[in-house]
Amino acid sequence: MQQIDPMVFVAVFQEMLGLAFWPLIGFILLMVVAVAGIVIRDGRISPRRLVFAQGLGAFGGILAVWAMLWFTSSRATDLLGGPIDWLLTLAIAAAGVIGGAMIVYVALSFGPTSARRSPAP
Amino acid sequence: MASSTERDLTRRSALRLALAGVAAAGWARPGEAAAKVATKARIVIAGAGAAGLAAASRLTQRLDGAQITLIDARRAHFYQPGFTLVAAGLKPKSYAIGATRDYVAAGATLVEDRVVAFHPESNVVVTAGGQRFGYDFLIVATGLQLDYAAIEGMDTRLIGVDGIGSVYGGPDAAEATWRELARFVERGGVGLFHRPETEMKCAGAPLKYAFIADDRLRRAETRRKAELIYAAQNKTLFSVPIVSEKVRMLFEERQIRMAHDHVMTAIDPGRRVATFKTPQGRTEIGYDFVNVIPPMRAPDPVRSSALAWQSGIFAADGWMEVDPATLRHRRFPNVFGIGDVAGVPKGKTAASVKWQVPVAVDHLVASLQGRVSEAAYNGYTSCPLITRIGRAMLVEFDYGNNLTPSFPGVIAPLEELWVSWVMKDIALKPTYLAMLRGQA
Image (cartoon, rainbow over all chains, first blue to last red):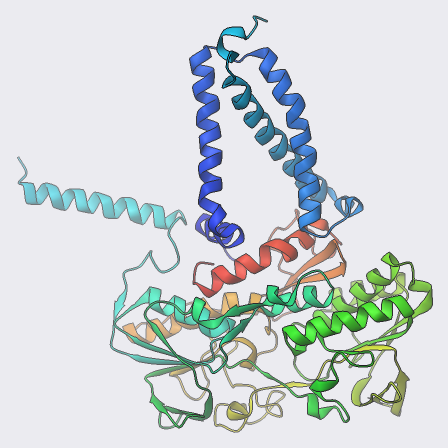
């Protein structure tokens, strides 16, 4: 390749995800805005919710790696090809953990009594 | 105090400057960075495969008012890099089939007909339907033809019958090849793989399929029931020496036996025997499964025209006589040859098309503008060489057999990596489709 053009990545991801591309981008942005809004609303990050979100987020990481293996007809042993494979696996897992944790944190924060019952650390 | 007109102009200039900055930073889509060139030129593109469609997209981005005509009779578009995955039993055949019309750029016209004669001396092409198209510029992107008849006893109707497969034959053939391979994996026997001695598209594909067969056998725990033979057309396994040597090491490790200087000349489906031409004379190899890869040549209308090489190594099969760096015809300067039909040392892959098209288009546009383009194609091509399902080597190289890794120090070209497989499996097709639209 002679150059890296960020718009090429956008075009490629659009082809990859089809109609789901923009809704997915919208959902990710919505989650980021929601987490930021909740932190501002509460004036802090609720440690209880954070621990819970991180715990469930770990499943998101496992799910992300599993889904990637499934989509690519790969086996777990294929992940051990070299350092770049370990890094890619970690990146996929991290995306799953962060994404999962954000969704859980937002869900907990919108619970009926979440704002009032968040215990002090 | 500046007048409102002056303020507007300043604002416009500032905006233009900002946009130029964005473009310089690489954020603009191809073709958006420069203003369109106004022209009434008639441009005919023969062939609406990967190269033809991508060229039409790029031209419509660069030109305003040009009459761009794509000529191709086939309504289905084949994503050919997907054939291997179909034949590996990983994707349905629909994965490799699209509709040509869906990728024709707005501003270009598709004529569903076939060019049967090129008359570069009079700037005319003639179609099977009897239409004549005059042109100011011609882009030949007809692809190549698979010459199954050159293998005595071979017929495309045999694909999918009695152990005969042929990954290159199209989506149906790739699917039929998988059925035959699956049967072979169950029963075992001799699996025979080879390649022709002509130029061919994606010379890594025959190797990939031998690796896939080995992997399928190992997964099914029937490897010990099978013997795999790879019959190479010369003393190497791949045109790039360093890659050839790596493949040799892997073949030895996987116990895939290698036979060199073997060119398939005949097949006897009844006896399940293939005949090869070797320096020692003819030799026969029996098979229970064979992936037949026919000789490949330029399509007859190109071969029989003045566009073909008249002498040299590309003349016999009629490849187009183009400059390897500019893809411009060496005798007819208003004609370009891109994709499989181009008579250049390497580059019959979709990755080559991706880098050839912008170069050829820039030279064409430069001719319209009366300038000289500096764009040059260095023979770059890429082969995600599958070595087992879930692993591949991302081999990239140029005319000079140099490795040209896109991610040096990160993705090692001669390592069997999952990341390279992931690229082949999920990123290549979207990149290819974006290329057809002129966006990648």
